[in-house]
Length: 216
Image 1 (cartoon, helix red, strand yellow):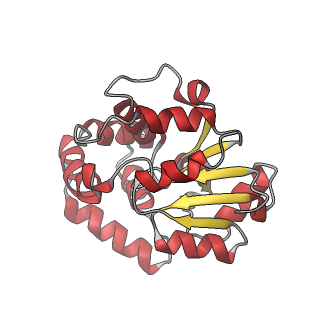
Image 2 (cartoon, helix red, strand yellow):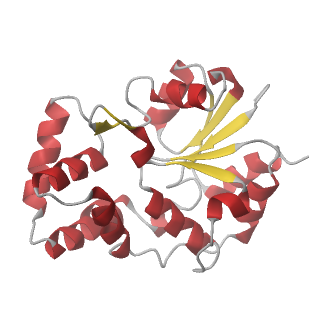
Image 3 (tube, helix red, strand yellow):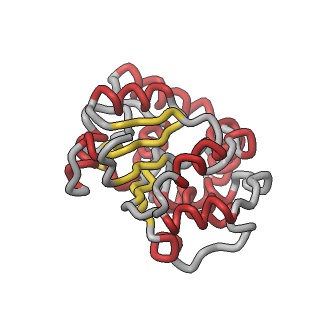
């Protein structure tokens, strides 16, 4: 971890333990409840998701976007309803992590394949269930959520094309100046291949250990 000038930090599984809010909580239970509010069903979502994969368009939220476009639903509205239908109550309060993020002497970007409203909800529960007025301003972090990656009609996840390299360039950084913390082995490998420094995270405990190393 030499010459690091910025941190790209994933959300799910890195800021909190994924057992506290699982993929199933989000992409099955939460999604199922949200679809029901629109009188839609998981079968249609799965069909759209499968067709997109065949065309090499990956990502849960690209399928959500396509479904919304088919039924003339605002993506932001759907994303908010999805968050309302996810059980976040198991996420542990972690004021130490929030304090470390605030004290880090480098630019910190929360780079996620999830939505901005989801990340805001995660931070609220890390704070003990109390929402921030402006989490980005109060902690001195910036969000790069899936909505920020929309290009040519689709969302570009961290695994797609040279998205991480592009995010570095947009932030005025060279890839080798960025340290990425992520719990996905695929994203970890993509980051290394694109010249970023990277650390494969297995728990928020590891995240906090790394953050301590960037506090002057």
